[in-house]
Length: 250
Image (cartoon, rainbow, N blue to C red; front, side):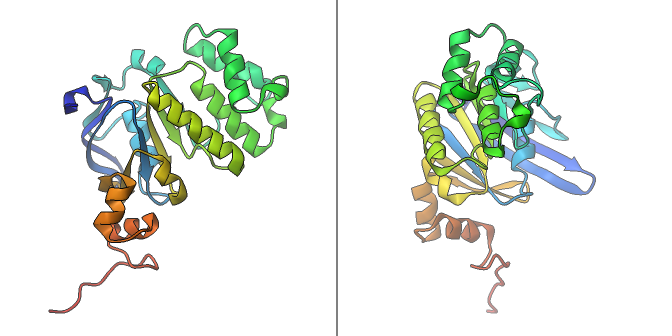
């Protein structure tokens, strides 16, 4: 598939905050129907990159495109699902009312679709509970339901499984895989390396730059290791304790 058919693109993307280069000249083209992992430590620029691509922030330089449309684009927002790190929920509204509200923002969504997504995140029996009375993990599940209810072709998930129990996390990832198989393009930001193998392709990010890209197997092989965390350290030029490698004297 050619780069012109990419679902998500960035060219020379920059975002600065004063002297801080949060996104520092990123180029990428992500093909449809795949799950991409954006892996890097906190503060590496993952969230800023997602916000730029999704059109929720304006770039200092460069451009981002989704399905060929330059972002930001208000019409394109209806074709995007974005789950931020912090839940954007209305605490006084019930579980179902929150999902229904976000569904209406995206256009006509059936009651059946709302019920299906609540069952997916295992909140069907809590549909009448105000969001303020949910545990942290349940709020995370509700946030995901609000993101998925309109069945967007492009999904941006920023740390989607934080606070979610291991069994439900497996179910989430199984659903992400089904969505990708059905045609959805998914970009997942995380700093948890044990989720990386669930992605089709990984982008290692550090200091606002993509320092490596490939399948989990390719990245391990390129770094000469069987461990993805060790692979990240290799591409970042760090030793096993996260300290910069010092070139040996000739």
